Image (cartoon, rainbow, N blue to C red; front, side, top):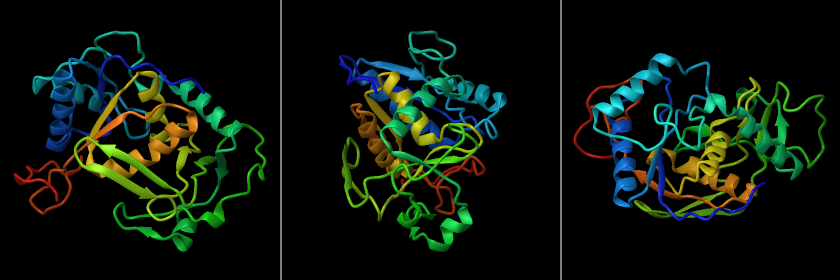
Length: 270
């Protein structure tokens, strides 16, 4: 679907999820994304990753913009600075996600999945870094061995990962990264039964169509980057580069979250 594009200019992005107020960790990551774009004399796009309409609110979206601007950061395109990549809200870009999903279906790289989290937890192996259960391979149907009355319908869709292979990419901050399919990650959601694209698919589609050349994010999303590399490859698109920032910790040594905005200790996670 689509062809590789010529990237003549660095292009980064700020992509907050308005499901809560930003914390210091977000701000540091956004500052680094801004810095990388300006150092490369490139473009910076502000995108609101509000695909999860059940958790995202306009109040949080407004607060995100205000907080980032208070830090002295600016951008070249976004909801308040129009440009050629509009719209800049994921909630308005669902037609692009549907097109990508149809392409993956045509290639036999996705399948409907009705398994519950409980069913997966009873069979799956715990992935310790993310504390999630890997989707068991035995739950995967044979190619085209399923029927759906409508597409995408009220059912989850999973990406058929290339089991037994290794996903590798060079991170500008953390050097070579390697993840084994079947041990570190397995078949993951690309479409949710509530009718919305999953995070991985929406992010890949938007980064491609917005011509993002480097993704700056926290190191807690390294595994997500590996999944997204698989999607870029499946779509026939060139992968962006990655820069994963170290995490900030709270006073208890835990990763900052939107529900815990206490000041971090002045050191990074190891």
